[in-house]
Length: 235
Image (cartoon, rainbow, N blue to C red; front, top):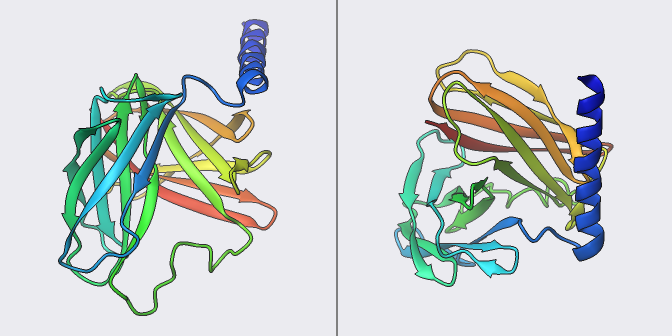
């Protein structure tokens, strides 16, 4: 059994390397880009967009696109279902109630894949605000994209993958772990991830209960120490 596992893993790794060598990126890769206005005035309605592509194709048949929005330092979150505007663009209208930092997560399920990129936006001119982490970690420029294999189900095991880039290139040989918990739980579960292909870190998680789960991706390597908080819904 152990020999079979090793052979299967080798085949997967070779297939991944082959795709990268041939085309530079997977044709089956679901990509989501969040677009927000450069400046946001509190109480003024703006449009938030998620541009969804699958390889070179614009995805016009996504199963679900939902924007999760919350203000930094607060626990209350708003979930807004997006509408398809054409050409793979899904959007919502949103007004931000006051000056401050906000986080926008686009939860996208399409083609049996799930993506949840995060973007920080600033409304107005809040005091004592650090814009994202470039000021705090000027040499880091690390982005984290969390993915799962389709919809998550109760009493099921799911693969969770973090795609990690530094300055647009895969961050390899990093220490990556997933911290998972539900709001009513007193303790978090830490799951160590292993690098499956360059810059992608994989772990498995068994979900015994349905509901909303918090998942924080922790990334460390030399001077890099980054983390990103997202939410998963188990049905």
